[in-house]
Image 1 (cartoon, rainbow, N blue to C red):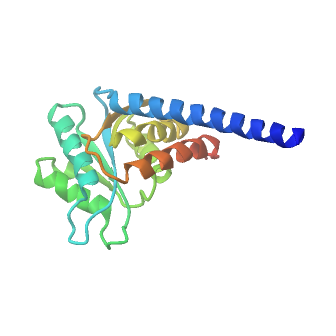
Image 2 (cartoon, rainbow, N blue to C red):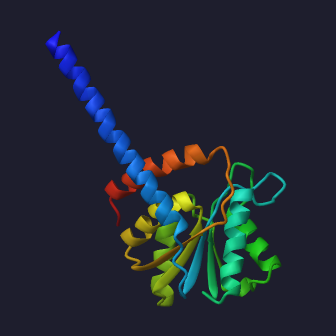
Length: 196
């Protein structure tokens, strides 16, 4: 009986510690995610997201692209890397992103397309190669607020030191709860991941 009570005590204690850890991480994720670092950079990196079957960017992707246009017009960078992959809808996210930016004033020759950016790790890997090839040193990446912490970690792990993040304009979506949980797990998975 005493052992059972002790086991329950340990279980509750463990759940309490995990709960505090999760809440602490969530607060950090939100504060960091909404605190933009807007500084001049060699290139902007825009993470891909869903494209609708008719070829239109999803709201989440559109918000990333619109923020990128705003920052480009402020003169914070001259070059843009659009990074995405072939989605289940049959569209290359990066190509759709480039087309969207072109139509809104960013010259095609200043947009680099990464169609192998199927996840944050792959985008960071590609970006590191481009920076080395072009002798660039700094990036400003654009994504949703909850993705900022993990994305920055990925870029740092690939040796990119001058990394600034800007969040896409906020719009609540019901899948945000899933995204936050995914980012919590994903951050520690990336922290433990072996990088080249």
